[in-house]
Image 1: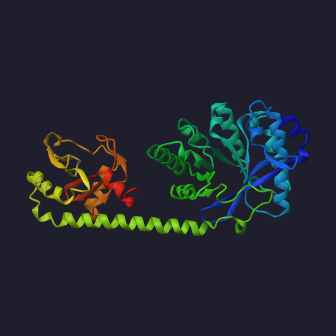
Image 2 (image 1 turned 45 degrees about the horizontal axis):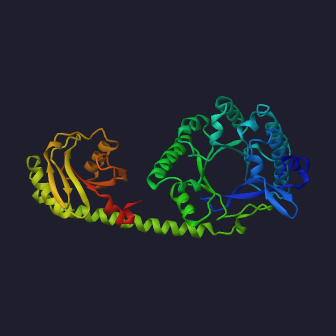
Image 3 (image 1 turned 120 degrees about the horizontal axis):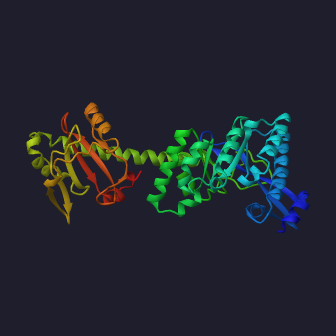
Length: 404
């Protein structure tokens, strides 16, 4: 499509709306405005027009403003509630220091469309251009109640610091990038993004959800809002919650039941491990004979574990390492005297075990020595001595409930 054909024939341009659905009440909480152009009998997406760097930004602004005016008018006419998500790149916003868009929104406010219903989406890669000016403008918009969403979050992890400065209301994550990374790599990215969202008080919106596995991923990783063809395709009409193609409540209920079952299986295994150790506590003969005590333990955890040791309450290792190689347990006395209190959560976990007199299972983490994903089961032998049993990845992989 020739950009001039589009700008000169705005009567052939129409907005379509893709619903954004809430994980809280399973209802439509807003719509992203997208553009279509009538080319003969076909309505074609304007995505290529907006993404083409050769198209003057003034052209894009004109078409965007035209679409926005129609969208607001239709929402007011139909008395539709919810947010209106609009896409603007940095160059568009900075043409007149953002004043044109702000004046437009103020006009809509006079017509009854509140400023706090507008969500401006900017993409993460926009931060590469004039970040200070863009950041200042977005914060200025926020003073009017306008919401800010950062699109394609995670594409550049180096921008996390800049996202923190802007403190957007929404982090928009493209589920298609799940396929770009290996499992562990993407888990790390999602962990960083979820921590960032919690720190700045932002909601996570997962977009481009096209299959059930992506919806499950979004739900499992704290997505408050969902968007994609699997839920609802863009349409010329403003969809309502009861016209969605998918019953989200039913889907989420299935996820909940599955997750509860996996948690229940994991807790049952932890209780079984506790009972194994309790039965051997009569053989505990103090810190001077810790290695002989661990020898008894190895027989009970031969399938699950590849390494175990005992520390005191200050993190000092008082036993040898017991390490399984080629199916046989070997002692590593040189590890005695190591101190592990520097590890995150070590002292907190020790104090919890001491207080509650119960074992603990760690989250999955990458072992420094083996570089494999492992978990550690720990148990209080006394108020001052704690057993640590490292669970191997092969056992974890064979038991799905240990992967969550």
